[in-house]
Length: 184
Image (cartoon, rainbow, N blue to C red; front, side, top):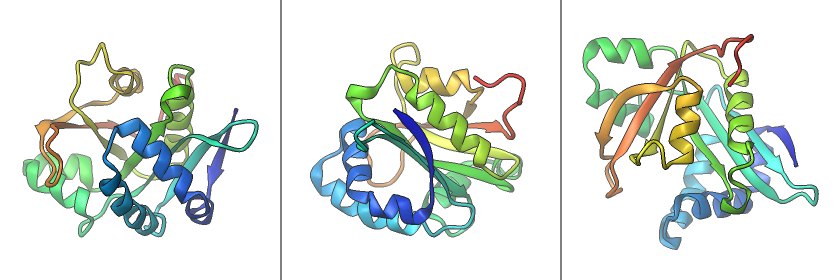
């Protein structure tokens, strides 16, 4: 497998593969996945967009991650902003790279792909902080939670409900850049 940086056009060319990996990793229903195509296409054109993908030796997408500069007027940003107290808004959102998606196909999980993707994505990111959201889960049982904690992510919001999703999420954050001498 090889990790590659992706341009917006690279991601859009492989959008069917991206949506398939996303659906497998998140366990979302087909009707939700159809709507995600449009969101992903819009995200790829946002300021500060950065993306990476893990490709198998035969070129299949085993995982991907992307993010961009978080800004007022973006749905996720505004949901989180409205839930934070004023001092936390300034700390976390004034100069923030939002990790929008980071997924690994279930058969490829457990081999360090997510960590390599997150490290590469955060190395490419611009901003003083980074935020992401992940479904609430027992931290010791969830690969995603263990990964984010290993990368130094801390709680920003817990048990947060985004409109349209019945699951509780956590919003996690950390400062950027990653320390060069202590890469997770």
